[in-house]
Amino acid sequence: MNILCFGDSNTYGISPVDGKRFAADERWPSLLGIKLGAGYQVIEAGQPNRTLVNDPPFSGNKLGIKYLEPYLAAYHLDVIVIQLGTNDLKRRFALSAADIANALEALILDIKNYYRHRELPKIIILSPPAVYEVGAYKSIYAGANAKCGELKLAFSEVCAKQQALFLDLTSLATPCLQEGVHLTFESHKSIADHVLRLIVK
Image 1: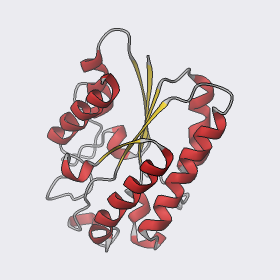
Image 2 (image 1 turned 180 degrees about the horizontal axis):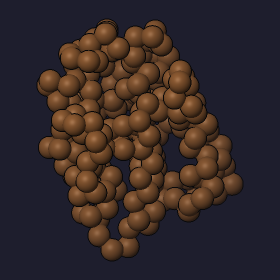
Image 3 (image 1 turned 60 degrees about the horizontal axis):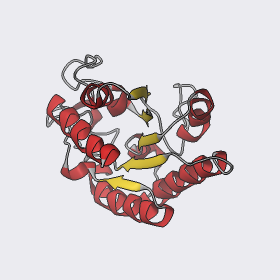
Image 4 (image 1 turned 90 degrees about the horizontal axis):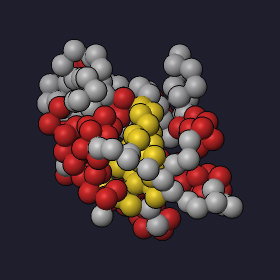
């Protein structure tokens, strides 16, 4: 079974402590693969700054919709796990929760269209975790915390409409209290455990 984990820096595994990447036995996609064991291949496709809606300035092509299709073409996928939306909350984009949720729905519809003549992989959507407006990210994410609850609800509604599985990260995983955006090691473990249950049940 092939499982694609497609997301941003919290899928890539950026540590809030030193900004480096967590080790393979610490970030949630790798942990998921370890927990699943033989017979499962987890494809890690996290990319810092990746968005659903915008190409971030000075960061090249990070837009989720543009960059997903090469993975669909390269692998026979059974499960697609998507963890996006946090970077879309940056103040400079001035997006509403509805804007971001509409982009998520467009991404899901793109996936369905790609597989219209083949069996559709199981789609699992992870809502963005909470964002704390602190430290170096305080101004970058100004107003993001207030949108997180709206975004969780909007993502849940999109998943119900599109028959995708939904996992609420705001109740399962939290960022570092001092850094505010990137998830702790404990949160990575929690995500791996909960995604595992959705895959094997």
